[in-house]
Length: 483
Ligand SMILES: Cc1cc2nc3c(=O)[nH]c(=O)nc-3n(C[C@H](O)[C@H](O)[C@H](O)COP(=O)(O)OP(=O)(O)OC[C@H]3O[C@@H](n4cnc5c(N)ncnc54)[C@H](O)[C@@H]3O)c2cc1C
Image (tube, rainbow, N blue to C red; front, side):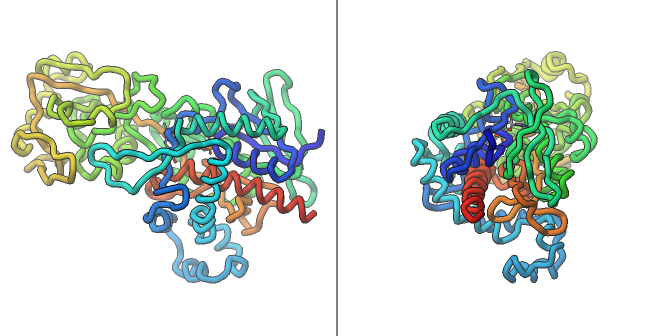
């Protein structure tokens, strides 16, 4: 049967596109690399918090953050140009890597109807309860997390006649002589290589966090020490982004950046973060401190911690703390690893247990303790200003001495949550080429699109996947109706 749409990927972005296109009368096929039991990529494993204060309102800070963190080095005349209607922009502005106002506006405007659409398919919502020092804006998420969205939308898609082909990988885009999409080159273990013809393709196959070659190509040295946080991320090997770039798509998003978190390498928890590293100290496998652990609130600093750990020898560090931290109410809600910390009755005992040189660790902990503020409980409600004196690197906040007779340590590695390099899209999720024009029939949504620069805007990736996936499906329906 001839298809109208091929969707690559079965996460929130791909499923939103598939359901929405089918609701608009299109015949849709979804290709998913994973087996059915593990479908849905990162979306399957995320809590899926969204920067929304209710189904009707995005958070007050959403637009400002997407603008502030929405570019690298944008020329001033391009900024002036963006006050004009997008149709009047020169091609080089349309293809430039920055978050253009129309796309941000589309995200914000389409978020509430997208939430109501989800609710119409049976998704309920819940609200995030900040723990410890988190001060970010209100966050809303689906009851049951991303898994609920994946499983619900797969069911809806199937009822609408969408076929999902598992263990099938999209490997290349097919074009006709006019440069319009005509299908996808696929591969599956059972069928080998084959083509699916369709005039529309939605590339929603996630980022490249599961591909060490692309991670190294874009992120650089030591990228092989970063591991996808969730099992879902391991399926995201970047072909979707590669095939769009090969077709002339304009790159967008910060290619050398990925959203990262400090996590316990021993754990199989789907998000084994250790979200308290700003309270104790971090040492590398030689026993040396290497950054100011108290630089800022965890939520503004944890990417930086993870990237820095990735670049240490062996991509590994140890987070040292004592009972003082475990006494903080709710602290366990910020430590997701399911493996206990290593415990030592002296610095030497701990050093032996974690395989760090004893002398170096003793010098590090003692120098830190001598420079730290007075003993006392951690004030987790603010940057407490209790800093070290004369220590290099310093610790600017929460510098309480550690109890040398009862130390704990978690191993820490860099978890890659998702990559930030993707392609430029219009407000309708159409892929823009390097000449500033839309590639006919080619759409992208979710992690394959470039929206983040400098620092990820927390709790927006699921939202972007849902909004632009759904919009891609709607736009395909609209264009089909006009033909
Ligand atoms: C532990 C964790 C917590 C997170 N928490 C949040 C949060 O609270 N809020 C938030 O906004 N974001 C969060 N994120 C990020 C967010 O979950 C993802 O960025 C988002 O779900 C991505 O959706 P997607 O549809 O673009 O990609 P994915 O959900 O990753 O789906 C991509 C799909 O494409 C498939 N695929 C890959 N390559 C191919 C191919 N070539 N052919 C066919 N199929 C292919 C994969 O198997 C996968 O099913 C979190 C991520 C993780 C891992």
